[in-house]
Length: 109
Length: 114
Image 1 (cartoon, each protein chain N blue to C red):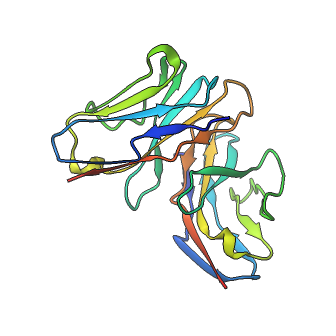
Image 2 (cartoon, rainbow over the protein chains, first blue to last red):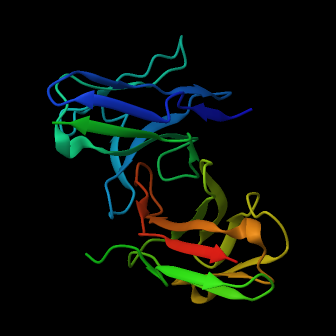
């Protein structure tokens, strides 16, 4: 079955601390992996995708096919990073997305 | 460019009533998707249009839900009759019909069925 699992509903860290939001997936084939973010009162927006191998707002995510994981990391969290983060996969970019349950990140001052 | 717009932003209706949600995709985006997040659960795919054609409607929960995209521009999602379990946030997203084109989401419509 195709599934995305985000084990943490809520992750709370202090400003300046490292943060890692976990994402594991189950998919037969080679999916495209994404992280989407929804800041308070804003729309869901793409944060990064594994095919770009880019760093956005200091966040990176490495696709580990052996562990079927796509964890999101940032070495030093900022208060403005507080938001809901969703890991998602699709068969191809721009295609139908399968979302995880989401992790609420709270960065405290 | 204008983003994906959804109307209304909120809707409160009684069980048994009808509600129609509207989505205006980004101009030129052939792909249009509807998703739903029911409270406490993940965002789930409902259906996918390519222009005016339904490409995939495997996520539509039952025949009380009807989606249309006449003319391949805006789309409507009608729920008739609404049930309590239909409450949630309905998202629309659009993308260009080319490889590596990312999805752009609207702000969502929060539907509450009482």
